Length: 328
Image (cartoon, rainbow, N blue to C red; front, side, top):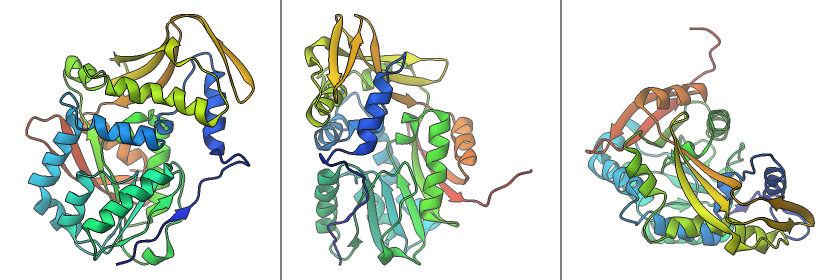
């Protein structure tokens, strides 16, 4: 078994700040509808809060996806086959990733994530559970092509992208991500991807605005992170978590709503918001079978199999990288 401390492919400035984080925040707060990409939720504190969210009674996706991985493990393993290098886009879940690794007998495990400390901690925990498995964490932004460790060169690749994280992105960005995954994994690779399904709006709202306020803390931590890392002075008590359903785009939206007129600076740049204005922090698109498969096809992946939980709330799709096509 090999457990490396991991590659670091994140570009940081002289102050140790992720350059892309600073750029995205400054650009997003300058827009008419202020918005920050959801991937910046996941610093070490945000990653831990999200793990707490997955255990909430209102948050069904983790239970539904775990049910699929448990009940359909044999089918999934037969279609994938042994010996793959599993490349997980995001630090491994303490529940779902071990289920997959146990089912398919992989040759190596490569988790990719931008939250370095959380990545190394979760990778070490997985390495302890699977002492015979080579584990190679890579600290990187998986929104673009990633150079995988040389130790997995030549191995067949299986991408793993659970949790319906693909739903956090608008269609254009999601398509770009699927294409960059294809470039990272190579032709002939497989992708096992979670896709949350359209369902009753009340169920969806509850899942993103839980009674204990954990999702609110997760959302608000984004502002705290900006203060910590970008020399900002955002008054945290001036903002409140808001979850809403957007039927036009079949998605839950999360916002941080200003409760009063507020001014603040980020990296020396001034900003002002009126009471009622929001910072749009996350989309969580919900899919039908058709819309999910169309998105995969647009990103260069051909669906091979699809499973849902017994309640029909969540889907797990196995797709194969396909050659580009310019005609039917």
